[in-house]
Amino acid sequence: EIVMTQSPATLSVSPGERATLSCRASQSISSNVAWYQQRPGQAPRLLIYDASTRATGIPARFSGSGSGTEFTLTISSLQSEDFAIYYCQQYRNWLSFGGGTKVEIK
Amino acid sequence: EMQMVESGGGLVQPGGSLRLSCVASGFTFTNYWMSWVRQAPGKGLEWVGNIKEDGSETFYVDSVKGRFTISRDNAKNSLFLQMNSLRAEDTAVYYCASTVIRGQGTLVTVSS
Image (cartoon, rainbow over all chains, first blue to last red; front, side, top):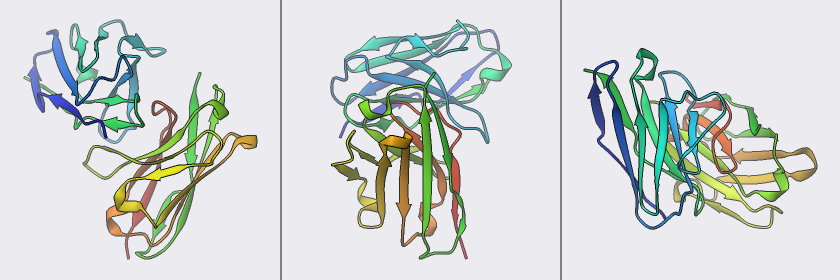
């Protein structure tokens, strides 16, 4: 089983600032990582797949990077609608998910 | 574009059964292992189980083994989850996924 660990659990950021979220895999997963945004009461929204490819309709302020075991989601300038929970997920070996990072208003 | 539409959720009593369905489109269904993923209220995402491309193998998380069964109909690009002996802790939104989640999910509530 591949364990995905996200940090920090909570990130306090002011609107307009940059947010950097981290995700670590327990073993190498190449670039088989996706990132999701989840707002209260909504389904997870796919942001990034293959570690760095933005899904259709996702704004350019969202970017993903990394390979192997270390991955990063960067939101370049936080907008009000970006305050939410973010999950990483690997699909190298079945599926497994990180515990999430809550991005809250500072 | 890859899409999944889940259905079949609802309110069921403890010990009851429910069958979920997922119709996939926008990709070659027969090329992918397919999974079910769930999210309990206020919790994170949990992989439930998966099924091989031809339906010949299935795997499950320990908490549902012997109670849940995954199947597929490749002619109809459809995935199913038969849930028996349901417990309160099975209450969750259930999503189907190939490599990623693309649907809105279906809510299963187990309560008397």
